[in-house]
Length: 233
Image 1 (cartoon, rainbow, N blue to C red):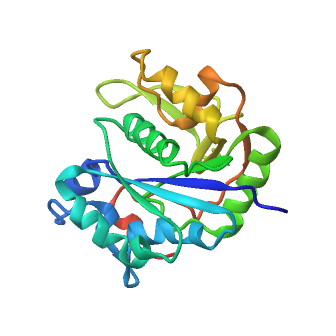
Image 2: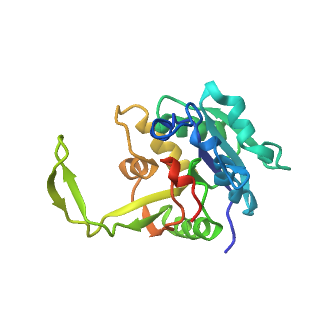
């Protein structure tokens, strides 16, 4: 299918608190860890550079580790004609994404669509990206998702099962999440003033713009949360 112009936001401004607390890596962010010779952040970003129509990539960063974030991107910062914007993150992921969208827009690099992807998802494949992009081109907004297969329970504060939750219709949502650029920018503009912290960009879009289509996700496209997530399958 023809690829309309698009931009990409890679989120890498988080604290990696759970990753650091669970391992001897100390203050090392998960995006800076290595998998087979390349950083997690590089692996999360590099597939998008091979897609025709890419206008720009905006990478959010923690200002305390700006230099390390650039280093983790390896040669992508100098990637031929595709601009890479380094965007200082905000106090939340939501604010960081909004900062990145504003930076792309103000530099005239938005494109028709934007793909928003976690910098801690290094296993994303091109087939997955194209599938979500194809759905978004029809629906205006889309994300991959995995149907929940395990039993789901709600727990009490002291660690006992409170109730079993019906898992039919429950999914684990992934990134990239893809939107028409002007729509998700408008949604984030409105969300920035409502005092609500949204769990992800699909929830921001759904609140202010409309429905988000789901397509089949990829179980390999896991997010690095704990040190064992770095292990190859």
